[in-house]
Structure formats: structure tokens, C-alpha cells
Length: 567
Image 1 (cartoon, one colour):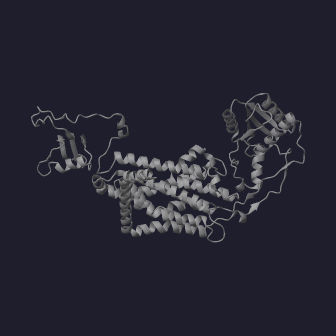
Image 2: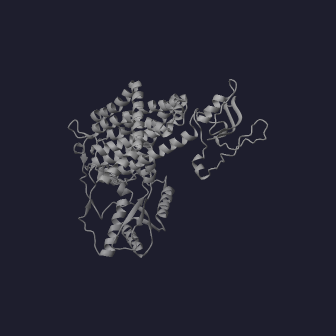
Image 3: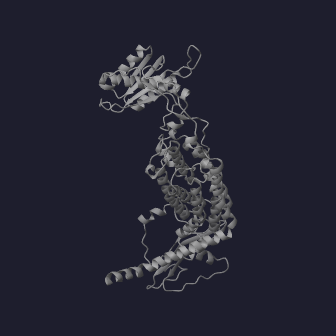
């Protein structure tokens, strides 16, 4: 026991200085953030009140109907499964081709011909070939009219067999030339009974599905579908039951947190252009600590905002059910990930400007325009693009949180509250991004934006600071070794004194040049100087000779126009 106590004592003593420095750094960051917030108390108050007020308004005044109160319609019409209305002409293609699939499709053609339909059947090598053939057939008939003067296009259907060699595991996919057919699994909000059923029947989807099923059952199971088998349209919610809250959420989120952006952008850019940041770096503050300070500065407001907003949307405050049927903690985590991603995105924008007002204007315009465009083209129509493309949109914070809200709303609409067990379930299919994937992409965006911020800030620090080369991240593979005992200022040059042989170079200045005002003012020109360890070196010269500029370059306050400094 004594030995264990001594070990713990040694461990505490060895780590205590590190812990003490970390606590002291955190204390300074909190003090600075508190001081800045205290000075800008009006802006801080607006940043705090605005999102809470907007979410309160939408929850209390634009609250969507609960699933139990929605107008659900049931189609009472029944359709005999083996007696669908057939079109006069069908164009069919299938893949792959073997004895099993050919026998099925030939039986389909025979049954359609007996019913009086004209059938064109093609076999293709792949699903892409089937799709291309259907497109070609569709385009070749565009503009044609029937005897009544109506637009006429024959029903084109492609059949893709998934298990062409397994007759006991019959699976296939149907592709049609109709663009306005529902392919999502979100059947609760369907197309409507009469029009929706007509599209499936007129396009050939239902007749060909019934014909393929009956051919398979007859050929391989000797079973004939009886006349008492009927199909009926699924129940659906009337179109007038419009989910206003889901539609307004992207705008609410953008508006709710927009006061954080102009305040933060302006503060960061002003600190950069005034030279305050570089002065703090000269005094020993690390660059990442400054960015951490602005993160803490933002979280002073965003943490309480997310806590209150999460309560507004997840807690039943009016007795009609919460706006989002999900746990408080998971929803709060979503908002916090959004907040962190949003802050790091602001960091990236701030590195691109040296004018606070310009950064504020362009930042806000970019935020709103990108949110509206991405929501209109991707979130509103998830099945138009694949999952991989939709995932990339989650790098924009407001779109990532919108995907999360949509998925949770889909579960809520279908009467199944979203839980953590549904983390990677999108709830409806059709290219939608699940909550789990959206969270992963927000975490990726935090690291990605942090890396971009660090890189741009290193190569373009603004009017103050030392700019690194664009390829500086690869310099670790190509480091040059300098001999500190060998001076680059040779002794036989007329203007240089030969250094003592026992000295060691501590700072080496080579061909240094610094200009201002786009090269019109030359402050330092062709300076070569070695400063030795253990010696006192003084720079002498008249006013304007470049002494202060040279020292500023040595301290990292300015970047040289040409030349280099090696410490």
C-alpha cells in the first residue's frame, strides 16, 4: 500500500505542472471570452434570444398536426389481380437471359397476346442496357398521338431478375419509362387513390408484375391465381395535411443562429487585421489557443441556446405532443454537432478576408444562398441523387441538421417514434441520409473545416504574421540541415567582418527584403546577417533604415517579401 501511495504521489507530482498549465490556459480563455461578451452585451443578448424566440414561435404557432389527427383516406375500390386493364402495346426488355428467365418472359408475352395486346420483347446483357433501350424507345415515340389526338407512348417495362439461377428464390425488379411514379418506401404520404393507381396501371407496372407472378406460379408451381385475389391502394394522408414545420426548419435554423456569424466573423477579422493576434503570438500564445478562444466565445451563447431549443422541440409544453418525438439528449447532441460544425465553417470564412464588413456581408449571403439551394435541390428531392451525393451535402451544417429532422419526422409520421436504435435507419429510403450518417458527416466537417482553417491561416495570415509556403505541409519530408558553426557571410567580402571561429550562429538572415504599399515602399533591402549565440547584437541605423521592420520579421510579426530567416 505504501509503495502504491508513493507511486501515485510521484505520478501527481510529474503531471501536476502540465495539468496546472492547462487549467491556467482554460481560465484565461474563459476570462477573455467573458470580457468580450460583457463588452458586447447587446449583441450577445440578441444571439441568445433570437433562436429561442424563433423556435418558440414555430413550435407554438406553426405546429404540425399529429398523425392521429391527420385525415387518412382509404381507397375502397378493389381490383382483381389477374384482370388488370391492359394497354394496346407493350415494349418489354429483360436481363439476364437463360432458360429460366426466357421461359417466364415468353409466358408473359403469350398471356398479353391472348388479351389482345401487341408485345415487343428484347433480351439484354445488363440492367444498364435495359434502361438505355427503354429510354430510346420512349424518346422515339415522343410527340406521337393516337386516334383521339392524345399523346401516345406505349407502355415500356424492363424486368431485371435478381436470382436467375434459383427457381425457389424468385426476385426481380421492374423499371418503367414513367418519371412521376413513386419509388420511395414512404407510403404514408402517397399520391392519392385514383390518380396514383392509374399511373401504376397505365405505365404497365401492375399488369406486367401480375403477368410475371402468374407465369412463375403456373410454370414452376402449377398454381393458377384464383379470381378472388384482389389488390387495393394503401391508405394515405390527404394532401391538405401539410407539414409546415418540416418545411420551415431549414429557414428557422439559418435565421436562428445567424447572429452568431456576423459577430464572430467581425471579431476574428478585426483581431487579425489590427495585429492583436500576432502580438499575442509573439508573447507566447499558440495559434490553436486563439482559435480555441473563439470557439469558447461562441459556445458561451450556443450551449444555453441549444439546451433551451432542444427543450422547446422535444418537451410537450402544450399538451398536444412535442414537435419532435425523440429523446432530449440525442436531439441536443444533434444541435451541438451542428453548432460546432457551424463555428468551424465561420472560422474558414474568416481566413479569406481582411475586411470585417466584407466578411460579414459575404458570409451571410453565402450561408443563406447555400442553405436554400442545397435544401431545394437535394433535401426536398432525396431520390433524385444517390446516397453518396446526399452525404456530401451534410458538410454544410444546416443541411445536415435538416436531414436529421426529416428522418425523425418520417418516423413520427408513420407512428413510430425515432429512437437511438434507428440511428442508421433513414426511415423511408430513396437516398435519404440517416441521423447517424448525418452526425458522422458533421463530425467530419468539424475536422475538415478545422484543417482548412489551419492551412489557410498558415499560408495567408493577413497583414501581420509570417506566411508559409503553399507546400509547407510537405516540408517535413524535405528538411535541410544547416551548419550553425558555418557562417554564410564569408570573411573575404569587403563589408563583412570575419566571425570568430568559436562562435555558433543562432539566427541567420539571408537576402532579406520587405516592401509595403504593393512594392512602392522598400523598408528592408538585401540584408544578410548572422546573430551569434552568447553575444549581444545591436542594430544601428538612422530613422527609416529598417531596424524595426527587421525585428518584426524576426519576431514573426511580418512576412518577408523575399529572403528567409532561420532561427
